[in-house]
Image (cartoon, rainbow, N blue to C red; front, side, top):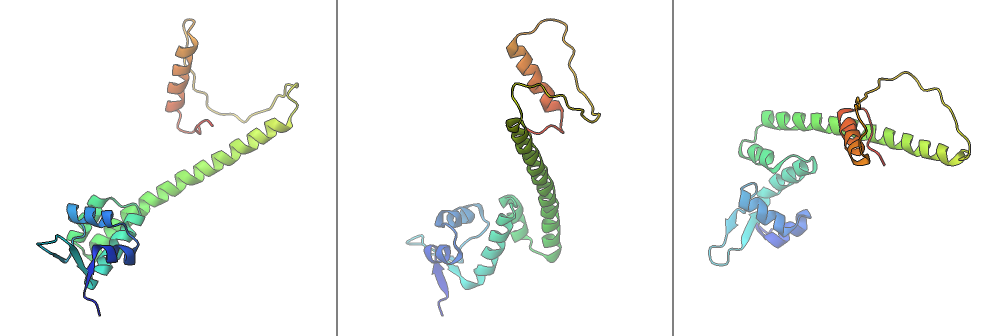
Length: 165
């Protein structure tokens, strides 16, 4: 059985670009088991496959290369639990953000459909539920550009407003 694999072979076997393997070597995350001093060819051993699989998994979870390097250098079960627990919290937060964006997008689509089905020549009044209103006092006439700037600033201060389409 083959004991050493070139960078091209390991890249193909693990479906990872050679440039990524070179970069991982450069920053010290995943270095070849042997580098030929004459040709500078990198060679990897079969024992390194599991480490590369771990790195790929952690990158797939969007864990930073810095955190992965720290983990690889001090790999313990406790470190793994800590790293994965932190990332789980990040993923749950991202999931909430995505769910909010999905809900908001569906509402915007429904609102647009509703507008398209209505009579554009007719004014429609709707009773809306009570909600907080944020206002900016204007003491003088302002230009359209100043109004737009104030509107953008107002939108940035309100966290519950979805981005405009």
